[in-house]
Length: 398
Length: 219
Image 1: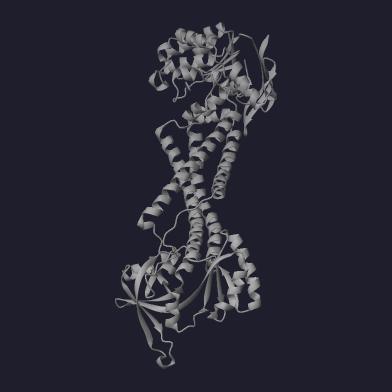
Image 2: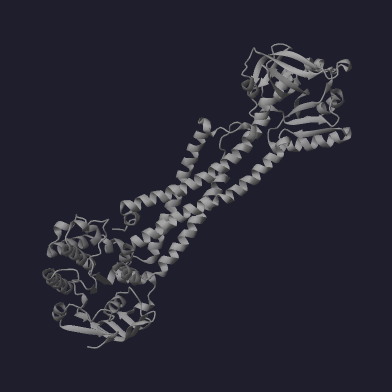
């Protein structure tokens, strides 16, 4: 015969109120774990989704000039010289107003060469002819238009005799693209490069941006290619190269800092739930003191009783972690399915995102939870060790 | 041969002196009663003998083992293997049935032999509580609960049977019955029986009586 863990467990959880208290303490602890996991997951998810979306809608590197438009022929030999550059697409980008049904919005019109552009991005644009355009999904929903509808773009006239007079051109929407970045979906319009050059009165080789696709996907490698290319561009003084995420660098950095500070602040939630567990243990120790002191009187050593408490706390930690993962999983599903969880894209850049958690996140959160549990264990163990059997018995009998 | 030896034991709880220089020697198999008014220190002395507490100074030797020299682990083993406790309150765990309660000391020392099982069933029959074994403590009477408690105390055939007001919670019929059972059974297992009581009738039924007052043995 052996005094099983389940027998002691039965003594501790004797009575409905104790069981309810125990379940409540575990739920609150697992909920706080889930809150921290979800927050970290959201932060990581935001970073990962933003980078993924930016990469999908842009190339790896973006080359531009301080002087605005430049002659692409000046730069092309350098691009061809670098083996790591797989593809490139020179662009013409101009500001414009899009008008439809008496509503207007400022947009950035990108003049692209369809096949080259599709090679350097994952957008898969389709122009039916030179007078068709592709627009972002948010812009389409802003105007409530679809493929086949006509949208008017307003450019400033390039003729000196018509200075200040707008140049209105109608385009047929031939495709609607989803960048995954709210501002791009709302503001970006794509048109055939030669058409835009003609509208703007530009020479054939005049461009103001070049999108470059490299042979690597890792951010570190792209960063290193960027440094390499920037070094080469120093000779041409007016040119500069940037990574595709550079314009969101500050935001990404802010998310990292926020992740750390929020994790610290959320420890408050853990502390509250830890107090719940502590309250449960104090409640059980007081309520079942008679039973534990009886077991001591019958020969159960304090060491074994403390071992039991350690096992019970480890059990609470384990169950809370498992439940925490489950609650985080449920939150992720809700985040992706319920409209109430959709982000206001104009504030958060992305209109939707998923949780992203890696093993380090789990290790970090579970270790902190274990640390708190250990603190409780040490406090309880000390209190139990300090109390003599007789004082326990007397206290219970009185 | 003396199985219990107490030499000049002092014990205080804060400012209150409970035992002041107690000396006592009890032989193997002896049956004695410790009597005295409430707060005289009789229960404290009993708990010192059972290894549930320790004196501030002095020596408590049981079977030549000085209890103050034992580690927490060894003291637990001593309580489990050599001492049987019968408290005033039945003190049965409500989450276990009576048989599981009886087997608690055996479970703690991981004993699982047929001899133990047959001894427990034999005791249950002698004490007339066989029908209670599968029941939970709240399903049986106070007298039956105390008899189950006695079986638990005797289950591992302890050399020392310590009873603190074992009949304090029982009516006079049950008191006489329980006391008789305790005496008979402790003789059967050759245990030394020490009973603490303030019941004069119970005390009178013992050959050796020790009276404590204000922490001193006065007779």
